Image (cartoon, rainbow, N blue to C red; front, side, top):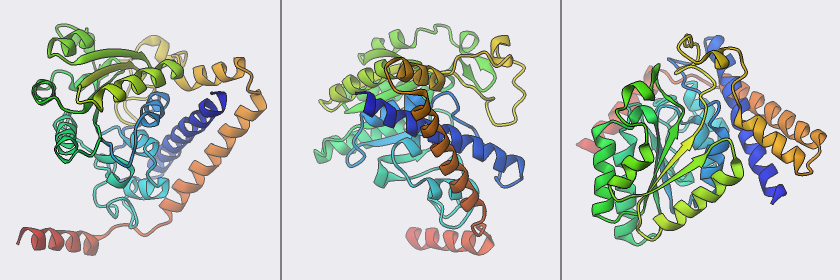
Length: 320
């Protein structure tokens, strides 16, 4: 068990380091547009991916999906190239940070429209059910999308059609800069989900063992055409986007005393018998790997007008 937890810890460390390397690349002017980092949600996302089968399951995510696509096993170099707008990215650098695709790794798509990924996951679930593939559609979204009509309609449809779908709401307490306590009439999202007839569960994103157990149970139920909703608590350790003025965040966060699930996981592993030196070695190895990947992506050829023109021509050919 500890060996498996150490493996998940290494994956979470890589995602954290990857995001840090991307932030530095952004500071250096290497990243087109804004980047929305998943810092704080890494442990929850590797726990979710651990319960899934990339061969049959398909995950959809939001604008904050670097960690998800990496957790599902996509090539980190291709992910980095896509985010940096380089040839060789997941979409040859044409889609960018908010529109990642790696269906061969069980990651159907991410989406920049708040909540729009949720009906796509319901569609993936319907496809899996009709084809008898045994797969699960998984929608990962934040509490900021909880009040979107398409999200609520997808939950209702999932129950009506008995879809093999898992709705995962990462609750970090904020939709951009607006607290969920302000934006929602009721912040009991699990009760709201249960009212649709969904199996509604909660998980503590600071506890990787509990997260793994809840996701394993949820996926098992979803495979039996029982739609499930999981609300998992995670912190958002950066602004809405990197470089955001986070003056709206709690004072504890501003003082860097906010709890960090990755630190909590490391402490658990140490207390369970894994030596501090082994864990430090894992962290340093993953940090070096992430730095190398982003540096290699930065040196790749940028996607230019010719690639964009060819992309438009290919679209026209399909439409024609």
